[in-house]
Length: 93
View 1 (cartoon, helix red, strand yellow):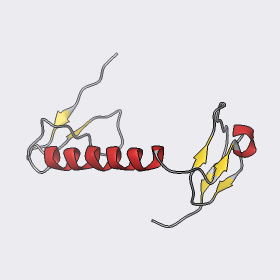
View 2 (cartoon, rainbow, N blue to C red):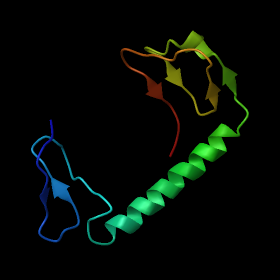
View 3 (cartoon, rainbow, N blue to C red):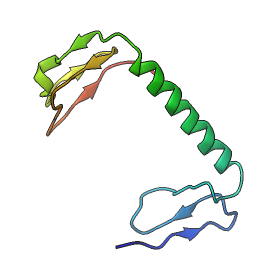
View 4 (cartoon, rainbow, N blue to C red):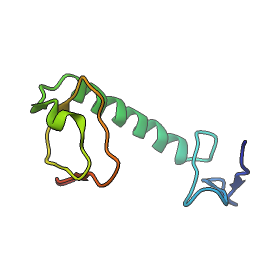
């Protein structure tokens, strides 16, 4: 049910044959814990901003987003949102 993680020599990350890339956690050496704290804080800030934003669109496509392209904006659904194929987000970083 689990898998093995192998720590890097510098203890900044771990690797596994079941994961592409690096695995990090708060128990790795700096700067990993500090970076994780910053990422969590940024995520909380983004969630709070989005939760309080006025939607640009409500119930777009009745939640069926397969093959659709979403422009930048705030979308709100009270029903199920799903896609089984391509969904494109068209915007800038």
